[in-house]
Length: 204
Image 1 (cartoon, rainbow, N blue to C red):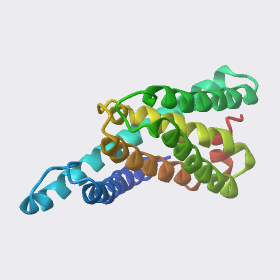
Image 2: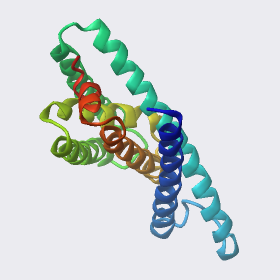
Image 3: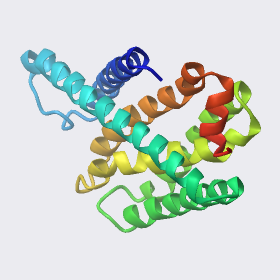
Image 4: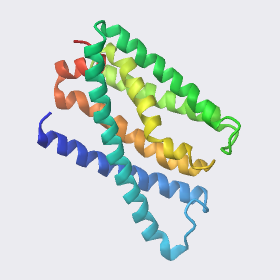
């Protein structure tokens, strides 16, 4: 990972975040006019602010991505048996899904949120993990699920703290998830198959 590759990944990630936020925000606006209460003349400015927020989501997702890579590097030096680190990631991913249900159960969010959000997040994460495995190795399953579930949830915490506004949660979690999916799928292409395998599998 040289500086040019890093800058390219960063720039592409924030642009993807802006595009994802723009599309998601526009759909939210059409579905719920109170999401961004603006008149017809304010739509263009509103879309600009959504894209600007997406740039922030992309930058935040990029920070989380490198935080995960650093965590993975440290954990591989602590756990002498790679399967222990992989097992821990699997446990944390499952715990986070339960925690999401706990956060949203009997809250101001719509009643179905407590099971719908974890289920959709799990399904989407499995899809990303499946793509990752098809391009790398079977050892990428659990680390990818951990990254897509746990890291995405941490980055989307402001959405969960929005006071029960489901549109705010959707507007936060979807762009962050897309940015994370892009980055994890780019990793093995940037590093090369052998080095990326070590990162995703947690193997030495």
